[in-house]
Length: 152
Image 1: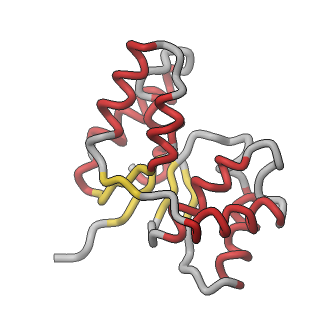
Image 2: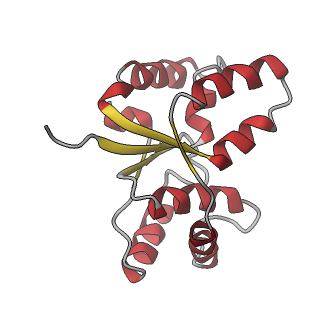
């Protein structure tokens, strides 16, 4: 039996399950979660911290309930250093270090994919190219950045 594809979810994917403002994205996210058992799914301590910052108590509880179903990845010093390099190279704007940290956590932990609905800073060609360049220069394996729709 082959090994399952390792997938890291950033917070935007989990929150899309409950975001009725974009019904299409919500439906696509529900479809991903409906087949998530095909993947080895991970979240990180950063995802949990972002969820804990959710002001709506009921929504926070729902988000956490979903997130704790998956394997938890730590925020390591190696991840922090790699995130700084992504930011230094322009992968994300300086005001969004958490976005770089999501990518770094996924990379350091050998994920095949980082899934996100963050088109502003993560799921975009420029970011993908910079992450690829940094990862190659530092001998990390490829990290494919995609939306949940792209792998269902």
